[in-house]
Length: 421
Image (cartoon, rainbow, N blue to C red):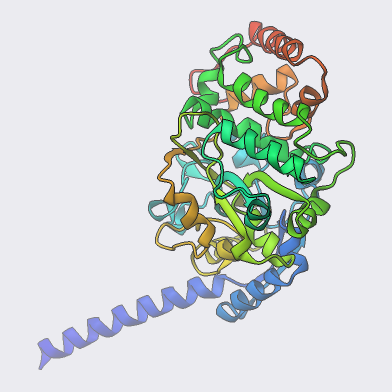
């Protein structure tokens, strides 16, 4: 009897311990947090309100306020300076890694790294400070209805096919491809294209060693030459001054614009705006004439928790909820960060049916960001690419950027760790 009682006694203690530990952990998820999001569309259409309700149903003592920030890239630096960046926010792309501990708390205790894409992208000194809110496949979005009306039976699989299709669409009074030059930020796709053209997701780390990366035959030259050809052939929109991002989506829906070079995240935005999903096609962008498609898998913004948050456990629980429990990825148009979850987007099925070579983008090193900034290259922001497209002398522009890069590199010293000293 005593042995049986002892076993029961210890079982009871273990039950109470784990029960109390579980309750204590859940009890810690309490209080109010604010999340600053770049997805204003998901704030406006009520998606975030639904996720907040679902989260708060799981954690009744928690409250979440979501604030959509337009022009997130340019708006948030001032908030960081003023320590007014909420409890959960997206890590600025040009923030050096060694500054992460100054602004954020580690997320390692969430124990997500073994099951997600890009777990180390925002790591520093063995600690993870952010996890991506979604994974992006970069590619050519095309309007199937317009293609069919113009007698184009299949999407372009080579660069020559793309230009021939563009010429046909232009003859039919369509805008073949919306580059969104006025908005500028969509031009970041031509920064990303160099990973496909080099076949290397870590190309930017190697670019540091190149004194003339804009020379003919090199990835950046090839990428920008494609964009320049599309623009100078009048295959893109006429208005290159105003920010026509939102109108460009409507023009795509009604059949004025035929293509975009963007990530798969744009698909649900088009559907949300009234387009039939069955009219939207998505394939790897045909960067060359090899016939072998290359798929760039990229990471979206990284979600982090402020070191100044009064409720960090709640903030961490929100990030874990978005990644592992919510349908954020499907609604936002991403491949889920959690590898165990599958995308329900039919366009991704079409994309992968072409059996592309997968190129997984690596995070840019601090050394690269420092050198790009020193050269005046607003990497992933699009303004310098807009200037190149608007220049009447493409070769002169390439020579100019080679000079800028070479001059910046002349007095630049990389660090042994790859981090800014």
